[in-house]
Length: 156
Length: 156
DNA sequence: GCTTGACCTCAAGCGTACTTGAGGTTGTTG
DNA sequence: CAACAACCTCAAGTACGCTTGAGGTCAAGC
Image (cartoon, rainbow over all chains, first blue to last red; front, top):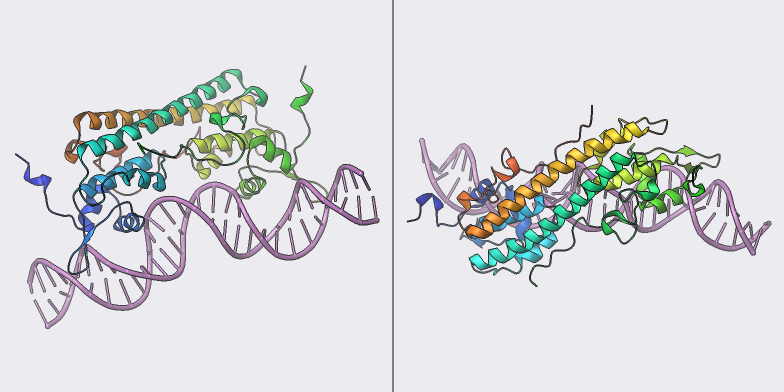
């Protein structure tokens, strides 16, 4: 039924690291920050439930989207901490992320279209250029730094 | 011909800050890092050529794309430092940036499609999921951190 | 039983992109 | 001419997301 390589045992730090691409030090960091959790053996070594594979991968994928760890944590916090999340749990998270992604793509496409316009018109007139007008950039409400993405608040 | 509000005088730090949305401290930082330049008055105060408006705005827009300052600097270094860039100069830069943008949009769209697939299939099998397989993510050549975007090397 | 590698903790360090603060100068304006 | 905002320099601090190092433990193989 199940391929044996799917496994069912807990994972050592080294295994989780190798299979997710995250450094062991990063796993420690994620745990310290509450993004993942582990059980300890008698010898005080970490053992990870297999669903941590998914959590860590989710973290990494989300980071590729430019989402800060605190937002990823907020999303993961909606999953059960003490047992493996259900399919529905992951589906909900994924759907939320897909929205983020859609928004991000829209944003970039608008940026691209504006940039194309600027190339077309030469756009030596800053006054009329959306890209080069700070109070206009991506609907920015004013000057000053802001996050690339709005805070992730999935199904709260 | 030219609207008077287009201006032709140099800008003070405060003016440049207000018109680009970058903090004065950020302007100092950009100058220290060689991304912008200024002339000094007799009293040692900075005066910015008007094309610095465009440089700073370019910096900020590029950052919205997730491009690191060193890559932005590399791009700006292809512009003349001692005189205002020509329309062709900016056009070339913008075109290079548009490529970055297109690539980034493609990347995100692939990610979105994969994510949609994962939602569709439930994707509790990590083995078959592109998103959750680190050696596959976005064509990653292996585990370990990597930059979201390839280095910007515009028309070098 | 000893070596070896994987593991442990905790503190410090690093790169990016700035901001903040101290202490002092400039320049405009009433 | 005094006040006051805006400017100056330089050093240190901040936030994020980790990595590195020191000093020690655990577990498997020879």
